[in-house]
Amino acid sequence: MNTSKAKIDFCVIGCGRVGTNLAVHLAGQRYRPAAFYSRTRASAQNAAFHAGEGKVFEKAADAAANCELIFITTPDSLIASVCDQMAADGGCNENSVVFHLSGALSSEILDSAQKTGAATGSVHPLQAFAPYEPGQASPFAGVNMSIEGSPGAAALGRKIVAALQARAFTIPTEAKTLYHAAAVVASNYLVTLEHFALTLLGQTGLDQARAYEILEPLIQGTLRNIASKGSVDALTGPVVRGDEAIIARHLADIDKKMPQFSAMYRLLGQHTLDIARMRKDFPKEADQQISDLLKNDT
Ligand SMILES: NC(=O)c1ccc[n+]([C@@H]2O[C@H](COP(=O)([O-])OP(=O)(O)OC[C@H]3O[C@@H](n4cnc5c(N)ncnc54)[C@H](OP(=O)(O)O)[C@@H]3O)[C@@H](O)[C@H]2O)c1
Image (tube, rainbow, N blue to C red; front, side, top):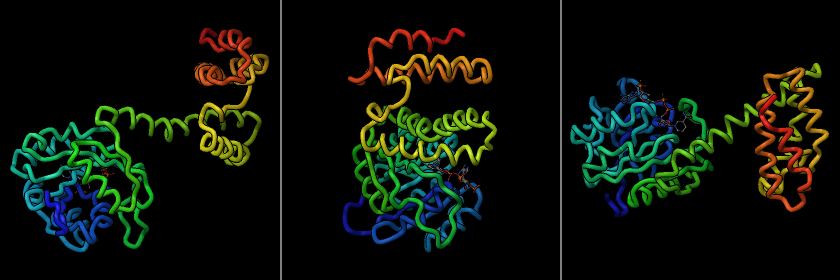
């Protein structure tokens, strides 16, 4: 890898939402978009056009062989096979650094490139990308990006993230799957949780928009409390107060009127009880009764 002040040529293999945005927003003082390859020539040409320079190639390996820095931004299911083909066709060697941008997969799937001597890593933006639109603000700016991989790749990854005006944090390769599970829980399962709350509130006759308007200050306040106090001290409500009578009433009504949520209420309650037990102010004498109430044996 070139460590001088000269520009680092990079190539993008897979010119969709992330690949095109990356090419446009990484192009600059230190990084030059030199080569593009995509399943369709039109996507590669589009990315090269918006990035301002770079040649379009007919084979991934030919695009990669022209660059020290290789990004594979195909759909997750194709990264390994695209990398295998690119490496087998001589697209990378000990002077190359190969990255993918998947959140769910680690750099281990770039094994075939690593065997050629290339450094391998993943850089994952915790951001949802739309197709590139000229003139829009960079979707990387201010975003948190995880980095994992070989020491050489991780070091370059941090520089790339800085050039994208994003914020880097490094994780161990073996933690990548749990890192991604955390992102799914924090985002997708929060939707599930709020859908549950909105459905309960909907029983009062409110439509979903109004129900959300009513709950929003509570949701935002809870998020602020987690930010300022941490998740254990942010907990309020009947479980941490040891108020088993209220929990019994919730369960009686949910079991009667919305039994499809009975198991979920109990399971979330059990995990909430685990958090409550970490608090000094939790009335321990209520523990057994609440625990019995929340058992999944309706
Ligand atoms: N979208 C997001 O919000 C987001 C966020 C973070 C990370 N990521 C990650 O970024 C990566 C790319 O995702 P994306 O959303 O940009 O996907 P995308 O918009 O579907 O783009 C993928 C591109 O890969 C190209 N492609 C398909 N098969 C190919 C092949 N065999 N060889 C070369 N190119 C091929 C397609 O090209 P054609 O257009 O030529 O058909 C398509 O443009 C994934 O690893 C994803 O997990 C995505």
